[in-house]
Every structure is written in structure tokens, then in C-alpha cells.
Image 1: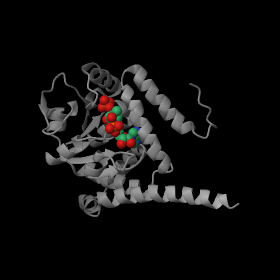
Image 2: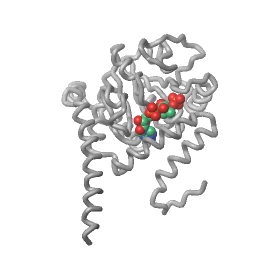
Image 3: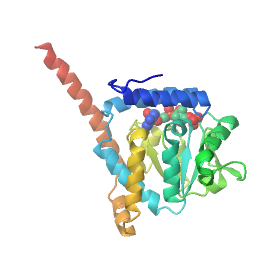
Length: 259
Ligand code: PTJ
């Protein structure tokens, strides 16, 4: 579909088209379109901007990424369609792997996503071909089946765009979890160690820049950033932002009534 660059919602339309492309290629599930719609609604309430609380979380996430000894990037059908290149770049900067992990599991889609990533970064993708699997306890979906050498052995998992029981189970298994979720109320957002309340397409470039910059900082500075970070504070700031946005919109209508 041709998207006129002057269309007021051109960016949002381009992201939608990218997901439709993902579905056509078999990378993204059809349910992924619904999940995206939910995200879009929250993004609207966040003024479609990377807010201060998201920037705080990006700093903490970057510090966690660098300090962890075995980070892993978990990719699903939505993130594969929207930001595979950024995932590959992050894996290269951190010298870590990407593992495909799906909610709407099918062997075929796992392979398609793995092959799509391998086209530009064979070395960064951990595949089921040469790796044994294991189960993370207390996950009520196929997401619980992970690669031993990947999510299984990792000490930090990047799990953007999912709302479910996996984050709680990963944290219970002793791992740190970083997520990106436009919905500050989702289960994943509420149980992760770091929640970046932002659109993944907007925050990935910030994450890449911050990680590159933080790699030059002394370790104790990064430890301090983590010490000073509080995910509950960041989530409540995000919810307050949404509240005030809605409040201002209602006030505006009230004022109009008397004009
Ligand atoms: O590829 P699969 O089978 O693993 O499925 C992927 C989806 C995303 C369909 C699956 O994980 C799912 O159903 O997710 P949920 O439970 O709908 O949660 C997705 C979360 O991501 C919601 O809280 C959305 O608000 C949020 N979200 C959607 N799009 C974006 C987003 N957050 C940040 N950036 C987005 N672009």
C-alpha cells in the first residue's frame, strides 16, 4: 500500500504495513495484528513519543545488558517483522545470541523466523537444530520450551512484546528480565526487572546507542544506574502520564462546551 509521507499518521501506517508484510511472509501470527492494535491504542495515549520514564528504563536496561554474563534476546513474530535488524545489531554489540520463542507455536514459523534472521546474521541465531531443549517450570504455553544453551543458561532475557506468565517464571528461575511493552499494566510489564514503556520501533535505536555509549563507562557507574533504578516508579510514571493525558483531553472538551 502506498503511504503518502504527508499523511498525519504515516509512521503508524508504515508500522502496520510492516506487520501485514510479516503475516504474508509467515513470520508474524494473525493474532500478532491484534496485539499490535492493543499496543497502538496505548501508544496514542503516550503521545507516540519516547517519554522520560522510557528513557530511564532504557538506561537501566542497557546497564543490565552490559553487566550480565550471558544475555539472550528472545524474538517473536511481531518483533521479527518490526525490528529484526535492530535485534541483530544488539546481539552483535553484546556478543550474544537471538532465540526464537513463540506463543502461537509452530515449528514452521520458528524455522521461517530463524532463516529470516540467519540471512543477515548466521552467527547470532541460536537454532533448535543443534541445541537441546529444556522446560522452564510454571509456563502455561509453548513459550516454556526453550533452548538449553540460550534462554536455559542465560542470566538475562530480553522479552519484548508479550503479556503473559513467562516473565514471572523467568524471574522465579533466577533470571533478570528486560521488556518493552506499551501497556504498563500487562503482566510482563509488571513483573519484569526493567520495563521500557515505549513502541519497540522507537526505542530500539535508543537502546543501541545507549548500549554502545555505556560500554565505554566503568562498571561501577553501571552498577549505580541499576541501584538507582526502580521499575515500579517508572510504571507508575507511565500510568500517571496516561492519566493526565486523558484528564487534559476531558478538560478540553469541558471548556469547549462553554465556547
Ligand atoms: O509470534 P508469537 O506467536 O510469539 O506471538 C506474538 C504476540 C505479540 C502475538 C504474543 O506475544 C501476544 O499475544 O502478545 P500479547 O499478550 O498481546 O502482548 C503483547 C504486548 O505488546 C501488549 O501488551 C501490547 O500492548 C504490546 N505491544 C504491541 N505492539 C507493541 C507493543 N509494545 C511495544 N511496541 C509495540 N510495537
